[in-house]
Length: 300
Image 1 (cartoon, rainbow, N blue to C red):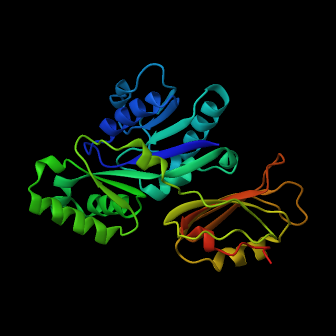
Image 2 (image 1 turned 90 degrees about the vertical axis):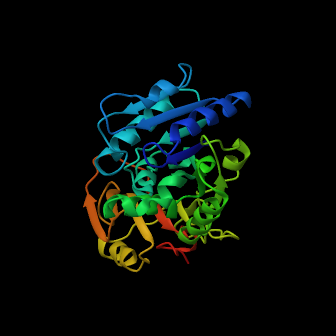
Image 3 (image 1 turned 180 degrees about the vertical axis):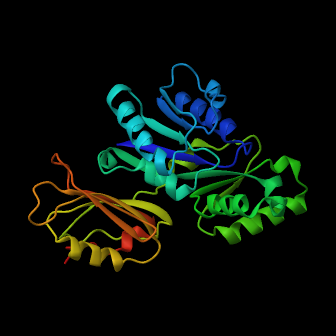
């Protein structure tokens, strides 16, 4: 399995500095990184920071989330097919919501080959203190990026007084009590801290009780293999029973009386079914909070 990290954070927060330093550390350890960069502009400014020997995919004029998710899946499949790498780093645009980014990365087609280690959010500590100056929409996204992080870098700490540093850490902990918060300058993060992250729940198969983890994963992903067929009504009834902390599901569901598993997508309480004309694997990916505790349809 390939380890995958999502780097999140606003423009100017220090993501690119972190990326270049993490690439350096991976190479020193003898690991080969690959990078997918998502940028909203037309020119790939940030990609100039990635050295030539690192496999790189870029998505310009597009977001990693929503309409860009299919493009992201295609980029990952292309990397898996064409490039030799050990670790994949996906640098999301500053405008990406963490749940959307995770959704774009995790396709049932290659989920078994990827080990999502977690979302690393770089937060500009000075901007945190001035967040009331942001528009309500931008401030909301900024808070969501911090709330869903598995590892949070409180960056640019050198620009703050000791009292301001304490205030930032205390307030960020209130927003996200689950993440380890690292005080940094220049986006420096030790590789061993990244390697301890784990945001992928164990694979579970329908009809088999899945292993329960000792600790709760916050925002996490889970690949579920479906071993029996269902009626659409049965499956949707199970979906309606899920807590509202399950944000996304997508995959291929075997439906009684239909030859190929149907493409199924769920987001914001809405369900979508589409016929599939080739035989796809009967698997769904679930994204949400504490997904390892969800009883899967068909489990005893």
